[in-house]
Amino acid sequence: MSDEPRKPSEENQPSEPRNPSPQRTQDPGGQGAEAIARTAMNPSPGPAGPAATKQPPEKTPEGAEKSVGASGASDVKTGTAGAAAQSAKPAAKPAAKKAPPPPDPRAVAAKEKADEIKAVLIAKLGASAVVETGAAHFTPMLLIDRGKWSDAVTALRDDPAWDLNYLECMAGTDYPEYIEVVVYLQSTELGHFVCMKTRTPRDGAKVPSLAPIYPVANWEEREIFDLLGVTFTGHPDMRRIMMWEEFEGHPLRKDYSVWD
Amino acid sequence: MALTDETDVVRTEEMLLNVGPQHPSTHGVFRMVVKISGETILEAEPVIGYLHRGTEKLAENLQYTQIIPYTDRLDYVSAMLNNYSLVHTVEEALGIAIPDRAEYIRVITMELNRLASHLIFFGTYLLDLGAMTPFLYAFEEREKIIDMFNELCGARITFNYMRIGGVKYDTPPGWLEQVDAFVKRMKGEMVKYRNLVTGNEIFLARVRGVGKYTTEQALGHGMSGINLRCTGYNWDLRKKKPYSIYDRFDWEVPLGKNGDCWDRYILHMEEMEQSLRIVEQALQQIQPGPVLAKVPKLIRVPAGEYYSGIEGTRGELGFYIVSDGKDKPYRLKIRRPSFENLQILPIILKGVPVGDMVAILGSIDPVLGEVGA
Image (cartoon, rainbow over all chains, first blue to last red; front, top):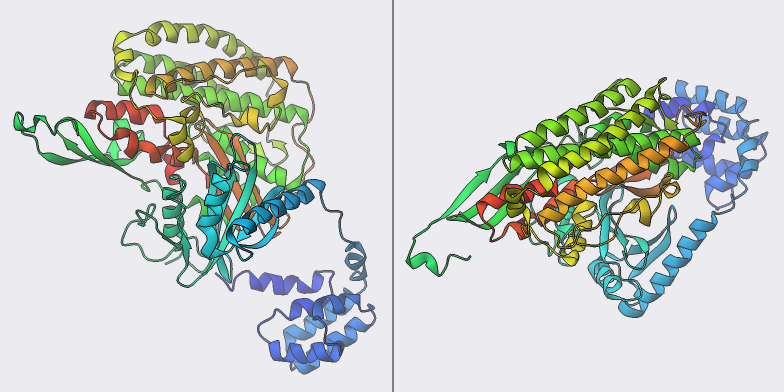
C-alpha cells in the first residue's frame, strides 16, 4: 500500500512544472547522493526548498546534471534530469504565482477567536495547555497538549462565556508521525463552534477520555479505539465496537493492509 | 428494580435475553443484550457493528464523486440527504456557487426523501406496536415518492443523484407537475393518518410517558433531530446553521414537550407536513436554468480540514474531511445521527417493562446501515 502511490508520483515528476530538486530530496533511494547534489547547488546552509525555487531557470539543468552525476546516473534519473531541463522554463510561472493569497477574512476571524480561547485556557491551565491555534477551514482550531486534553475541554464546557455543551463530531486521523483526535464542540445557546484536537504518538497511543464529560464520547471513543487503536484512559468501557473482539489490527490506520 | 420488595411474594430470577441481531423489531441487524427480572428490564446493552462495511476506510481510496454512491448505503431510507451532506461539505471546501435550479431540485428531493423516510417510521413504528393497516397506507404513499425518484435518477433507493456542484440530471418533462399533484394528495393523506392513528386510545396508552429523557440528557448524548426536539429544545440545523436555500421558505420547526415516545411520533407527523410546505413553496419558486455548476472533472479539495453538518432525517448528518490536496480524502469521518442517538438506550430502557422496549427503540428511529457505516 505505502509503496503504491509513490511510483506514479515519480513518473509524473518530470511533467510537473516545478524545480526538481526539492522533490527529489523526498526520494528515499538516493538520499545521500541527493544531499551532495544539494550542497553543490546551494552552498548556502539555508533550507533547500525555497532557495532552489529562487534560482534562475538556466541554472536548473546544470544542478540536475550534477545530481545525476552524484547518484551514479541510473536510467531513471537521467530521464528525470532530461525532462527537468525541458520543464525548467515553465518552472518560473508557479514561482511567480506564489505570491501569498490573501487570507480569507473568515479564516482570520476564526484564528482570532481561537487565540481568544487560548487566552482563557492558558489563564486556567497554564501556558503549556495550548500548543497551537489556527483555523480548520472557518472554524477556530486549538491544538491542546495531550496531558491537559480533558481538563481543557471541561474548562470550556463549564465556562459560562463559552458553554460548549454539545459534542458535535469526534474523529481520529492517522498521520505518519502521530494520531490526532479531533472534536468539534458547539455551544447550542451561544452559537460558538470550536474545533479542538490533541496528538498522541502512534505507538502506545493514549488520550484522556472525554466520556465522563460528554456521554456521547463513549461510543465515539470506542470507535476510535477500535479502528485507530487509541486507548482512552478513564473510559468506562474500552472495548471494540465495530469489529469483533478477536479481530487483530486497526483498520483505519494507514499501514493496515486491506488484503490480509 | 421495582420488584425488590415483591420478591418475597413472587420469586423471579434475573435472566439474560438476547434481542436480535435478527429480529424484526430492531429495524435491521441490531442486538440488545437485556437483563430482565420478570417483566422489568434491569440493564440493556446495545451491541452494534453487524453492518459495518468500512465506508470510511473505503472512501480513502475513492475520488470524491465516487464516494457519493457509498453514502447512499448509510442511511438507506433517506439517501438523498446523505448524498447532499457529502457534496455540501466538498462544495463548502471548494467554495463553489451552486445554480439556483439545482438548489431547488435538491431541496425538493431532500424534503420528499425526508417525507418518505418519515412514512417508513410511521408505518413500521405502528407495525411494531401491532397495527398492521398504517403500514400499508404509508408504503403506498412512499412507493409514489420512490417512483418519482426512479423517474428522476433511475434508482429507487440508492439514488446517487447529487453531484459536487449540483445534481446529475434535470427533472424530466412533467416531473414537477407530478410532484405538485403528489403534494396536494399527500395533504389529504396526512388527515387520514391523523384520524386513523393519532387519537387511538390503545396507541396513546402504549406511547404516552414512555421512554422519557430530558434536554440535558439528550444534549449530553449528542442527540439531534427529532430525538432532541421532542424534549422541547429548538435545534434544527436548517434554521440554526442555514444551508442550501432553506431561508427562502416559510416553515416552522415543530417542537415536543415531554421527550417521550408520543412526542417523537407526533413530531414525525408534523415534520411531514412541514416538508410538504417546503416542497410546495419550492415548486412555486423554481425557475429553469442549469443544474450543474462548472466544476473541474477531477475534484481536488485544497489541503485542510472541513466539517459541515446538515439536518438529516434522523438528526445531524455531518462529514469531516481531511484533505492533503489530492483528489481523494486523506480521512473521511461521517457523523451518523443514528449512531449517537442509540447511545441513550441503556438509560431510558432501565426499569421499563419488556413490552415497552420495542416502543422505545422504534421511536428513536435508528437505521442500522448508518449505525454500522
